[in-house]
Length: 461
Ligand code: ADP
Image 1 (cartoon, protein in one colour):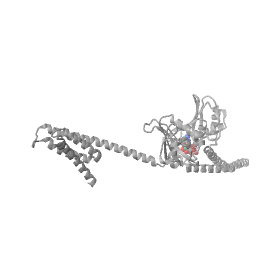
Image 2: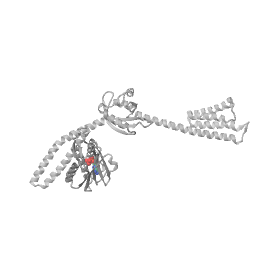
Image 3: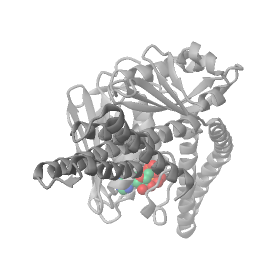
Image 4: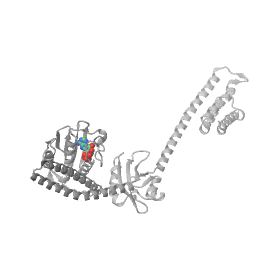
């Protein structure tokens, strides 16, 4: 036991003896249970300020002191039951008090420690945290906010959060913010530019969450980090892909034209073996051209320049056209059509056809063991849904959530099926641009149903 601990026991001994002296000598209280109350008071004090060990020690000392006061009467031991019971009751009461107060102190200390730990974590986190009132005023911010934005503490207390958002992004951020604010418990993660104190801007990834109804927070939480270098890198990659794909497109288109001329000449010369080789070459050129178009579409989407050329067209006519042309190219599968009434749809016909072609070719590609595909349309309320059902390899539930991400390919197909993992990403973006929705239901080894839904009221651009 170290010196400090010994002192705690000494102090508790002095306090109990002091209390006994006060009662017996100064107040003249003897042989009375009221004297025990003072000991209880001292024990609680010792417990609060010196700890459990000294408190138990104080209890033991007070029992010894009370023993002589309660049980010894006129120099004789009082053998009647009542003083023994009083002393026993005193011991039990105090043991109980020590137990209850000690657990309470422990719980409070643990709570305080947890709170301190959590506060330090948030305070010193490299990510920025802000608690914002519905009006936009910053109620709390951690140190990272100052570091990332360059604003000083007192400036952040004065300004509203909107002053931190780059002007061009303000409307979008506000839209998301108020949408989240109007739904208890909802959250969204967005990327936008942030205006720093020196006028420069950075890109941030900002998670906005509604904790207005959470009693301990009662604010909108913004948690953001600087992602400028990642965005710049993506931008450079996109620029590179854009330039490279664009430059490759022209020579490849000429190459395709030469192959077709060559194929015609060989046909005229009746040279079947060489024709076969040339048509294989043509197929490979088509694949490369397809990939280049996908890469170009991705760069267009990334830089927000995929413009839709909207027109009104009959949906069933488009579906039949796609089914017919793909059916003649891929003779391994029969494409069955189950069409609802033919309705006019307004949108970019070429882009919607691109989506359907992608889903049908995927359906064929990923169902090598079957020979059938079903394309169905269904009109429900003011939406039309186009389903493409295959009976192929299917997709696990685990992989489904990533399918519409850029360059995502299911692990098990990487080796055996060629592709870039861009078709579904592009298709999904096209459908979103038409204010529609895309989805999939699938079961491994049974097949998949990919669908996209378009609003019928697409009469306005
Ligand atoms: P790609 O087919 O070029 O890889 P996609 O974006 O069209 O790219 O598809 C992404 C991934 O989704 C594919 O790699 C494949 O793993 C999976 N997938 C798409 N369609 C189907 C389907 N009909 N059945 C099973 N898996 C599919």
